Image (cartoon, rainbow, N blue to C red; front, side, top):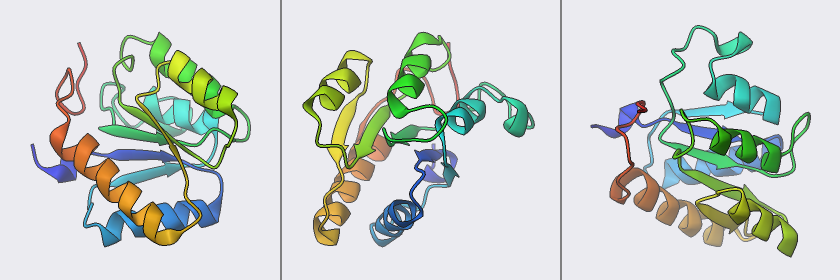
Length: 152
């Protein structure tokens, strides 16, 4: 399947971090469609084809979710918990991408089923490299349990 069908869901409320992530993806030639949502409620709404995303089929899932932890309305850990508790999304790759330095956030993320935890580096070059590796692994090398956009 071509990369243009592999959608990335970016859950990020900080406009600067959103712009930085999108720029890093483009600079690394990761040209996948990126859907940006800005709070936890909107993330779940998108994933489960709720009210504001009801025009999308509920089984069309992104290839990867980049999830911030510090979100309005519903925090990232609660979003992760709900993703893992639903059969449609239980195996969806979720990478926590956050500025959090809290050990408990790292532990909680993995306990709730995060696939990876990346602390956003302050240095842009480090961030670029992290995004390059993230794209290479999750969008090219990783073999998901179900084809992109599908579920059991």
